[in-house]
Length: 103
Image (tube, rainbow, N blue to C red; front, side, top):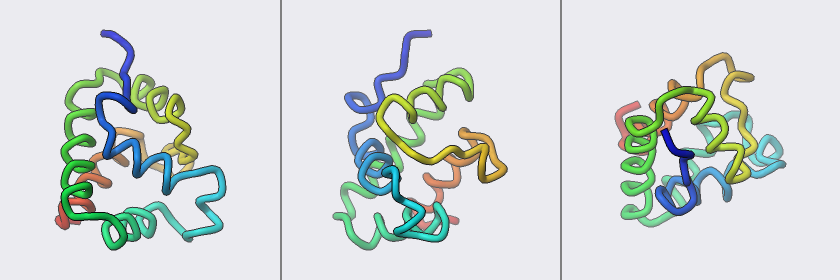
């Protein structure tokens, strides 16, 4: 499987990951769910919908959790899902559900 190009293949998700999960994100929010909700409240609905679609496509098109972790790291996302007690795939699925309003 080729390397995931998160920034070019999934730009709306990349905006969420880089603009909201920056190196000081824990100073802005108590948990990762709050940041997704802030993204939903602050960004255009079309961007939110595209971010969800991007997350779903990334999950479907990426073989291993290690590849997903590398993709997040490559774009500068400062959230380490394993540190919250869940896998990166489970976290991205939860993010997609939050963006869709189903979580």
